[in-house]
Image (cartoon, rainbow, N blue to C red):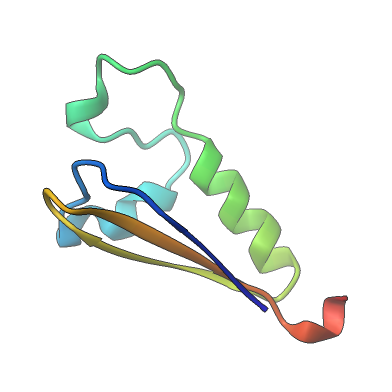
Length: 75
């Protein structure tokens, strides 16, 4: 099963995509936005515990697409 979420935000630089799943990571440009940087870390841990994975596709200035991929067997 694949679930996708897409936004039209500022996007993420390709070199930073691996960093967004680190615990407490925050994009430098998001310093003025409330948050602690644990959401994507927890999401990845939960999805991986179910033998799934998360993929991210992003272009700076165009937004980001996040896909959660879970094996069908878990349902």
